[in-house]
Length: 245
Image (cartoon, rainbow, N blue to C red):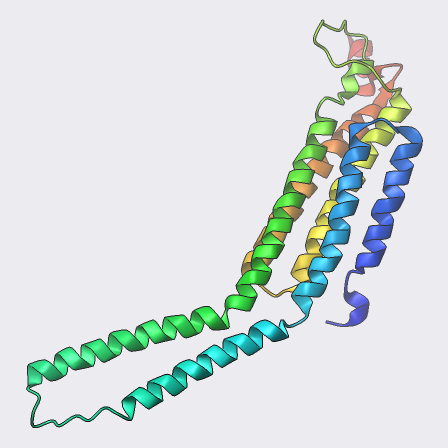
């Protein structure tokens, strides 16, 4: 993969910071602004995590290879004291001995696999913990747009528990647009992990976040389209049906 086709973490962090400023200009006391501040902190943490994930852990690798070498030397050294006289052992005893050796080889192989994959598992665990946090942020963004109902501008009478009309039509459009941008940036921060480590579990988790954010953006843009089609607080489709009646 060429360097030009890679996502630039600095650009993503800069975009999130600019979005936070735009939200502050229009909605300084909104909960969405607090979520974007948290997302900005996550993006900075992601940049540090990607540096950790991309670089080899020299100390851990050296310790792992040293333990493997010590184990192999110990096995070879122990075999040097082993003397087997086939005339002394019966067939049953040989079968028992071979089974024990086979079981020990399986255990040794499992230990070697554990040591060799330790670095990858440590990096995967850090990435999955961060991706879980991004998934939570996406759900929080969804909660912020949940009660932003475009039909509060209709002529229907509100009930005692109807959402309060806090924003104008234009402000509500901007708020929903910021929600859509925020969810898209969550997906971009998550994609940095798939870019840094070629791990099937990480890539699958990133894809799940992408599907989640895409669904959220789709819901938000449906509300924006309803707002755009409204005329004097009534959707154009409703107005047309009234004229036909």
